[in-house]
Length: 276
Image (tube, rainbow, N blue to C red; front, side, top):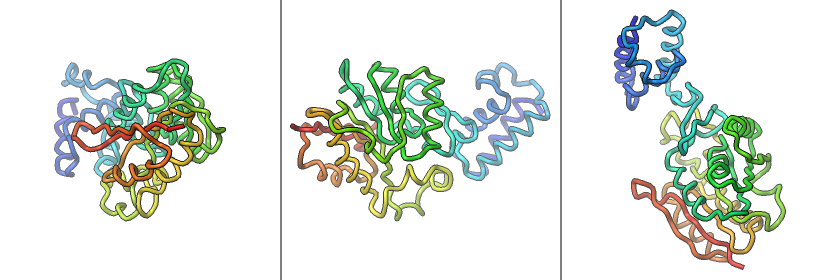
């Protein structure tokens, strides 16, 4: 079995299983099985696969056909130009969340302290720390997620303080200049219609907010106002159709609100300033 033949067979299997981008997925999984970069596959198309590599590749294809996300199979996902390790204990970082990072970068000034609520893999906090040099803290309610985030921080040489707590409960009042968060915002009623890759494999604690999907926003906004200094910024990633309900939560004590859409034109990030 050559590399070329393995790619063809893997692509056909994934196509039959109605897996998105089957050729790219086959390439990523085969490269992972070989411990190589994807470019290697084209430079060595006629190379014979070892029995071990073929067994690994077959297992990865089977896992993907069962719905397991490619990122959980390879244990990796790129975010903001860096490679992050991911496990089923954390959400897979999405390109849309890079808009949250961009919005935060525009508001972090020299000497600021920033907080990421809901660290997950650490992608947001680590990106902010490496891009700005600011003092960055991050919290998560999941100890398992914090272990992943701390590991990514060490790998990428990012100075981030990770703490286990609910939202910002472990911090004193007026501790930060910027608070950013991609909180759980999926309602339980939407669980049956989620993609199986999300519904069956990503951590529920990072997905579901409650019956309406707005429950964490409500608590987070209150806690963020407490830990923000006057004039400090709160930046929230928005869920589907959550803009207006979240904006209504910011009528008192907040100002200068702006909304940043993603590349599809969907409202993605809401930025607002704590008034004095």
